[in-house]
Length: 201
Image (cartoon, rainbow, N blue to C red; front, side, top):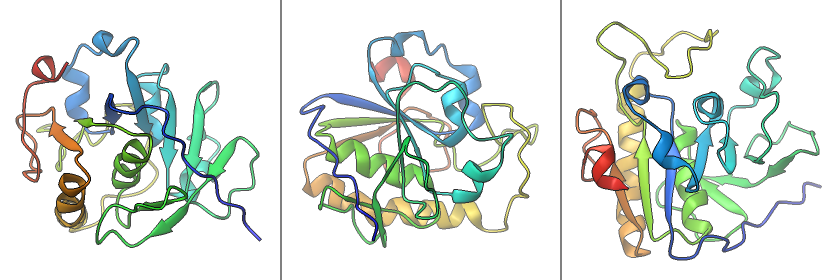
């Protein structure tokens, strides 16, 4: 029987940066993140190795030796029940009709970023700043900021599904008193206010 990890209220009232893997991150100077609370989503930890937490939901990502994080020193959290690695804290995944409020659960379906947002809320974040939540590839077709070779093709409709997931959880974040800002003014995700990264610090 799986014993789920319960997220503590470590970051009560703080600003938490959720670092997703959109290519817009490559245009940012991330040095202001030093000393800040950061949750990296999957391989985006490569872009900011000092992240406090790495979150992933996709078990195949961990199983791929080329992608599995090597040298990451922070906390690793996942909803991939097949992962039996003692380094990985497991939480229960629930449908993303709203952010999960029970601290051993996170809501997500189509994107690990939703789970990372939920985790930040569990930690007590008052404000969550999204980095790399682009909702589209770059103009040159680049899909990720971390420049890793990605073994899986882009599925048709995936960005629409992610956008719908964000739209579904947004009202619950507001109800919980958590402000969310998208630090990419050019993002295709219009669920939350968009501001330049420098204005989110």
